Image (tube, rainbow, N blue to C red; front, side):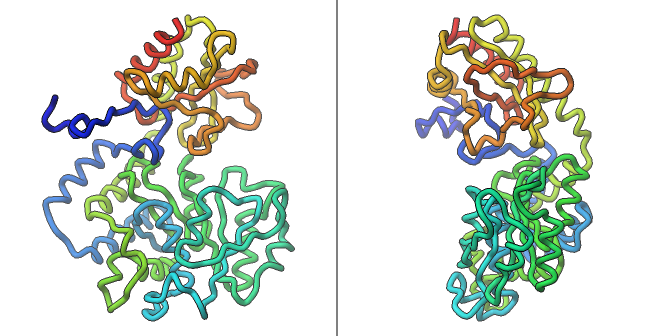
Length: 397
């Protein structure tokens, strides 16, 4: 055993992560350029307040916003954004959170937009108020829900902008600003195409991203937007706890100086890279797996378009007369090597097929109705590609 292999030392068997950069499987792996930048930055100490100021300025230039701030993930970006809207830069209010008596503390969220992570809008002590019905929220619904306790409107950014289900982001901003309240947008993985990412970043008063999605350390994120609101976010951060006597609630959301650099460099790389090459690399891996398992009885593999920054995923359909999907997924997860794949119903997989279920570029006719699972390739290397194909072939041969 390698003396530095602490997974083995602890009795942990690593997995091949064929799902994607999901938290439950350890998140993401920073790119080589990001790792080098992080390692280089470790050799010196700095004043953290200066680091956040300068990286924030650089991030805002990259995304075309007034200001930016690195956080410990998108969830922290949301939590600190809400705290900032409630407490501002008032030291007494900051020290009171998450107790919000006497503060405006209601965050409106259109009911069709309810989702797993909307919990983050409440973590700093706010109350999340549903607006409209599960099927529809109208402009009138949103306008009528605003009252003297409303401190902000939450918005869950999605590519279709909630057409025919909820008020658009543009109209939500108009309603919010007419009532002198901000909009906090969760755009965690809305990072591609780049024009779309830039438009999203510039859309709301506070916009939150998960930096793990674009090659940064798993535990990092960004919040960008209007300077007056970013300044309020800064006042809640972990370093604010030691500045001007503020007992800020962001203290548990610490970042290493290396992570701050990592998130900044990763963003720089992301907005400047050739994304056509990136996606072609994914497709090449998917085609390799498809070719390996193509001759296996009862298996149909096709590359399908998905509405995320991944571009495409590999859909593997299984004939029930040969094996159940659940059994195959279980054997992959608990065999040797351990391979984690994404069942289509997995809410954490971010691999939902497009509504049409038909893909572009000649991939995937989607005519079969057999149960299936998805193979993501963003976190696997070329050796993993062959191991995945060979293991599926071994189980079903």
